[in-house]
Length: 331
Figure 1: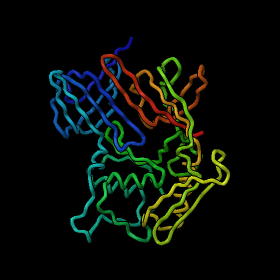
Figure 2 (figure 1 turned 120 degrees about the vertical axis):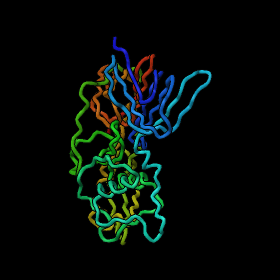
Figure 3 (figure 1 turned 180 degrees about the vertical axis):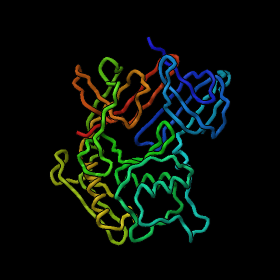
Figure 4 (figure 1 turned 90 degrees about the vertical axis):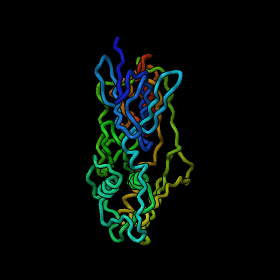
C-alpha cells in the first residue's frame, strides 16, 4: 500500500499540509502544521505532496501568518500564492494629476503592465485582438492591481490565477468544460487529465446537483463615449419572456462599438446555460489541481463525462491523503 509523503519549505517534520485552490478565489492558500519552522513572514514557501517519496510541487507562495502552539509544541504556517502581491498592492499615484495611464492597448498587455507594478513578472498569456482604450486613454488610480485585472478578466470572460510554480496566468479559461466552439481567442477544446478518473471505487461521498443561479440570458454592456451593446436570448429554463440580466460597466476601457458587441456576445455565451455540479471527496492524488478537466465514470450511479475542477482542496497527513473537489459543467 502506498504511503503519503509531503514536505514544505523551512518546515521540519510536517504533521499535515492542506492546499486549497479555487477558480473564484484571488489566490490559493497553503496551511502547514509542523514541529518547527525556520522561515519568517514573507518567506517563500513551496509545498509538495505525493506517495512513497515521489513528491509533486502543489504550491508556491509567501508566508503570511505564523502561529506557535503551546503546549502542543507545533507550528501552524499559512501562506498565499504569489498573486497576493497583486491583491495587496494599491496602485496610487503620489501626484493625482499623473495617474497610471494606458491607451490603445491589448488586454493582455494592460494586465501585464499592471502586474509589473506589483513586482509580478512571471506571466503567461494568450495573444488577443481585444484592444481597449482606443480613443480615450484609461486612467487607473486608487485601485488594487488584482481588482483591476480581475475586472478586465471578468469583462472578457477570461481568468487570472497563479499556478503551482508561481506563474501568473491570464487566459480564456471558462469555469466549465470548453469545447472550442465559440471562435473566441484562446477557446480550445479541453483535454481531460490523463492518469486519473473518478469512479465509485475511489469516491468516498458525493453530491450531484443542477441549478440556474448563474444563468443570465440578457447582457448589457456600457462603455465610454456613449458606447453600449445588448444581447439576449430566450431560455427554456426561465418563464417565457423573462430575462435575467448581467450588466457590464467598463467605462472608457470599451470605447469602440466592435468591442462592446464582442463583450456582450462573449458573456451571453458564457452565462446562458444551466450548471451541473459534482461535489465529492476522493483518494488523494498529486495529479489533481483546480482548473483542470477530469473524467467522471461512475456507472453505478449514472454520472459520467468530463467536468471542470472548480475547487480543489488537498489534505495530506499521517492519517492519509484525500482531495475534496467541486466539479462543474454546463447543461
